[in-house]
Image (tube, rainbow, N blue to C red; front, side, top):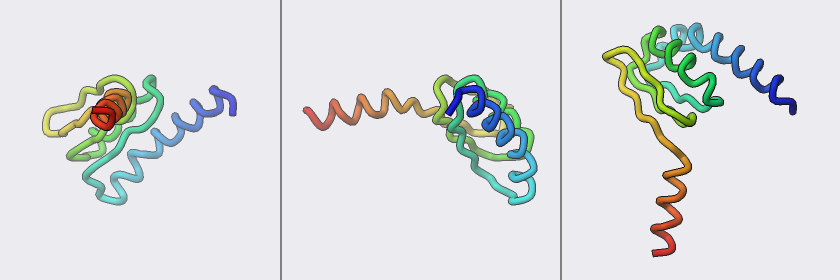
Length: 87
C-alpha cells in the first residue's frame, strides 16, 4: 500500500477520534500512528477529555495538564527484552 494512502487514512481516523471519544466516554487512549501524526492525535485526545494516553508512536507527545502520558519506545523495550533473555 502506498504511503500517501496510509497517511490519508491515518489523518481521517485521527479526525474521527474526537467524536468517538466523546460518544463512548473513554478515559484512556492509545496512540499508534506514524510519528508525524502523534502530536495531533494527542491534542485531539486531550481536548476530548481523556485522562490518560499510552503513546506507542516514535517520539514524545505533550499534552495539557491533567492528562497522564506514558511514552513507550518499543525499540528500547524489545532491546531490553532480548538483552535480558540472552543474559
